[in-house]
Image (cartoon, rainbow, N blue to C red; front, top):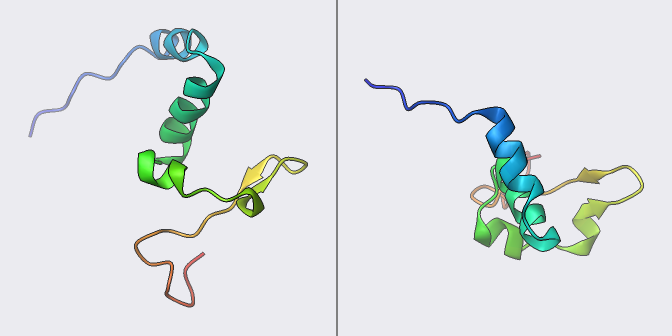
Length: 69
């Protein structure tokens, strides 16, 4: 198996910093939470705690399971 070359972290940070505010949000959610467009689109205000700076959301594939965080 071949490994893809890893991007230069400074280049990634510069790219994200140069994005408009809303796109920066999407890029950070994708990079830090592994979210895609459907995940981001289904976020609800109750899942975001601005005071604690946390985002709590069940995994979509298994959200109906009782013991899924």
